[in-house]
Image 1 (cartoon, rainbow, N blue to C red):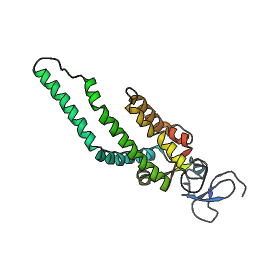
Image 2 (image 1 turned 90 degrees about the vertical axis):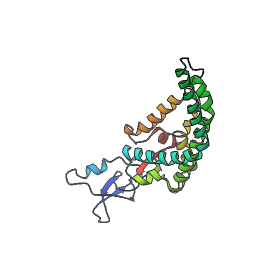
Image 3 (image 1 turned 180 degrees about the vertical axis):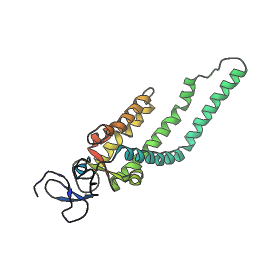
Image 4 (image 1 turned 45 degrees about the vertical axis):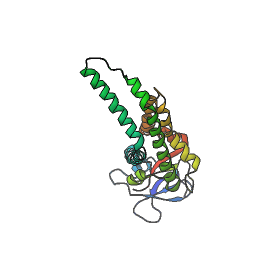
Length: 229
């Protein structure tokens, strides 16, 4: 068969469609296009070069929320001693404000004093969260090309250029560092809002990108594809 890559009726006689990569038939299949939309609708579905449909933004968001809850829960448990310090400092600060207000005087403790007191514990908590996230994402993406959240919504990470075997460590680490790893900069005063802005932009980028890649996908050369119909 000499034809451009795309979805075609399954040559094996199945009722669905099969992806032709321009040279040979692949193992990727799709349900048949509806009579109303015609077969052209199937070829219009954004796909990776290997024929797998690219994941939608909603699926990516769902996976991110699930993964964040898992990482956050583990990091919170590990960081309990430092959370206790933060709560105590806040309680002391509020007590001083209340006492000063009742006595009709200004408080001798400012918000800058509070920040100085909790800065250390917050740095530790940030590092704990990053380390938990690194182990969580790196181990699963390397081992299964997907995290718990991704498997829950039916998507996985793949390199844009087709390849066999697990994701390379370099790809896994670059993808994590350019999305989650930048969070370490949030411990630097006045940089937190810039980090948050970047993460939001990186996460929203698939909405208008032709390959549905986030900024971290572009850095690592990856895409998120559907792992099941």
